[in-house]
Amino acid sequence: MTDAPLAQDAVVRGSVYRDPGLFQRELERIWYRVWVYVGHESEVPKPGDFVRRQIGLQPVIMVRGNDDKVRVFYNRCRHRANLVCFAERGVAKSIVCPYHGWTYANTGELVAPTFDDGYDYDLEKERFGLTPLPRQDSYRGLVFASVAAEGQSLAEHLGGVTEFLDLFMDLSPEGEIAVDAGEQKVVYRGNWKYMPENSMEGDYHGPFIHGVAFDLYAKRTGFDVTALATDEVPDVIRSLPGGHMVEDYRGAPMDPPKRQPSAARLEYIAKLKARHGEAKAAAMLSTMAPLLYVFPNLMYVITHLRVVQPVSVDRTHSYYFPVMLKGAPAEINEARLSDHEFMFGSAGFVSPDDVEIMERNQVGMQARGDDRLYIGRGMHRERSMPDGGRSGMTRDETHLRGFWRHYVSLMEDGE
Image (cartoon, rainbow, N blue to C red; front, side, top):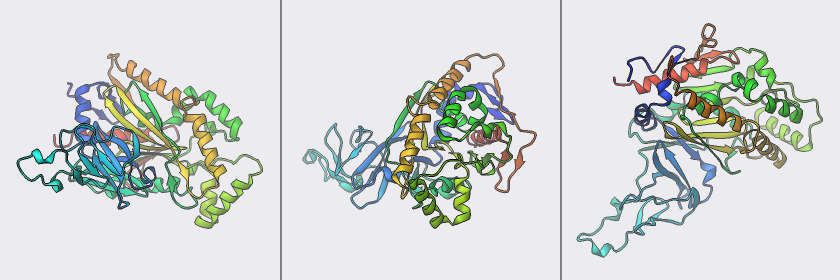
């Protein structure tokens, strides 16, 4: 392995996308140290509801117990380590390991080991419950967990990104989102870091790989999204401390289409004004909520939460969860879902292009020539922000540089 930095200033080393050794190091120094998003509480609305997830390569489950508390456990039987939940999601009054039948309450306690009369001591059930993650916390229904027993608090990890999380959640007249409209799984043959990089710089690559989608969307909705890329607007691109990235369009208002709003739209506007006041509601309705990335695995992109899941150095799973707005008229949420399918569905006009381009990235990365990537756009004009982050113009790569600075700080910590 070369002694050159993994990333420095505007240069990133190509091996960070293809070196299996670095991938294993990422698991230990990033995925098994920091807070990782697991799921939203609305995915498990009733006692016994569970979903199966992973932190790095470690399987976990998020389950709502009969006491109505949401918990995150390792998905591993305390007997012989079989998966206690193989299904992606379901309902379980009790959790039964399929291997030898050990049974757990949905609150984690061991209820019934099998053939326990064969043990030569009194099996202490309280010692063999499902193992909870060392740390678990949540923010507005977003559940995070950490494999590490010690470290910064979730509030410290999120820092200033909560401002941007609030912006898309506040689109709900009740201030709550629901992640219950289904789940879409995307598999691509490429490194996990391509997904946050690609997801957060659409104004740069969009005109080249999404031109058809942008044209169709403008005809469909009246919004010309290419204007955001054409006009270089200051402070749209943000890097935040902690490796978080943001595309903040509040400084680039979009003119609403000159159409008579429907009754449902008028009802929605009235509800937002009642909750937030005239000024804030008007500001929210004049643009779109910021796109954001919460290091290392959570994104909000226009219509949905996007979760990235590393599998190997050159294989990644990503999950798209459409976000519905509680309290909004059904027509508003139906329109959001329609927009999601149009852009990001399996036959959509945006997501398939992104998957193809990321896979080509992984292939291109095998060419070793000058093994450096250059992310210097806007470096000469980026501004330092009061929160310790930096900002740039619409197509700048300021946020990517912030991501890589944080990445390097974690990968080289203690060396």
